[in-house]
Length: 387
Ligand code: GAL
Image (cartoon, rainbow, N blue to C red; front, side):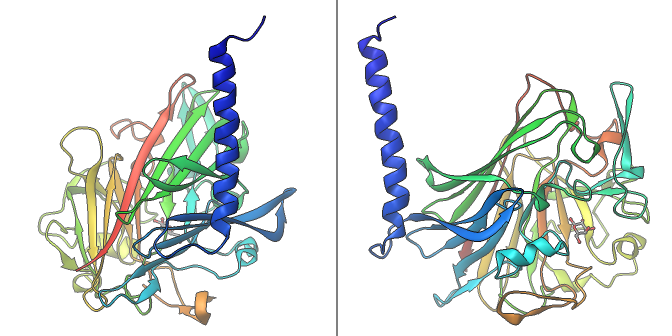
């Protein structure tokens, strides 16, 4: 059939868009006038499963720079100015992308999945069928198993986005990977906006019923160094999900009132981290899921973090129902990261937006089941600033 004028115009437009996309990548690799938002793409010399690891750098006019790579969709660095304008990297990790292949990173900067956090007893039943997963955290399954999404290579591509500069990471997790049913096709996009937001958009579809819970596992330190005990944190939640001694939720939604979990007003993290509260013993500090207070669906503020010495702030908003606040309790000085810094106890903290841990085994929790024909679509927005 001859092509209509409409088809021809469409195909000409597609060609133009493709050329423009390639040009913008090529052009931005050259020195830019100060203040111009850029996205650069740099191949490394490292191959994983026959694919080269690539590194993408997003910058905006306000001097924020975020670097991420195709291995694990890991955020390698996130540089932001302090209140005097001095730029520092506010996330923990390694300088050399190859260092992550050693397999001992505690999920620094990664996209965690297919199920972020724990599934009790490393098993679940879906539509009457039992599924067995790797028990990689005592009796439980943690962060997607032995080789979760943090330890595989994704495809990366700069994308045009009216909101800012963007990189999209895509991957299909095969049916049966780490014991999960269904091939899961994913797209995770990092977009840096002129307003210093880093927008993380998650999209996934499946060809069989499955469970999904994706999160971003950056370890923040708004001072750039030292421990995070002086950081002030507010969490927009009246309730949290208490856990047993293996960190699996009991199913209860307990009030934060009168406990060290009450962050409804900004509190220094160090103020109650050594509390005798039994829940704090289980977590060896904060390692819990908060039930976010929200007025309906959509994006709502989950947490606000502030570091008085640097003046840096971080606001986290999300469409997710929960937030895991992990105070870096398992960091023990055995890992040396960027700038030869030894990562000691509580030198970084994670604010992981998510569905509640062990939801596949808790009928009363919001569901994490994804079925063919449905779209898994969540969004989390991190905004950095100074006060
Ligand atoms: C957190 C989790 C912690 C720990 C950490 C990685 O997301 O809540 O219990 O597993 O990841 O070391």
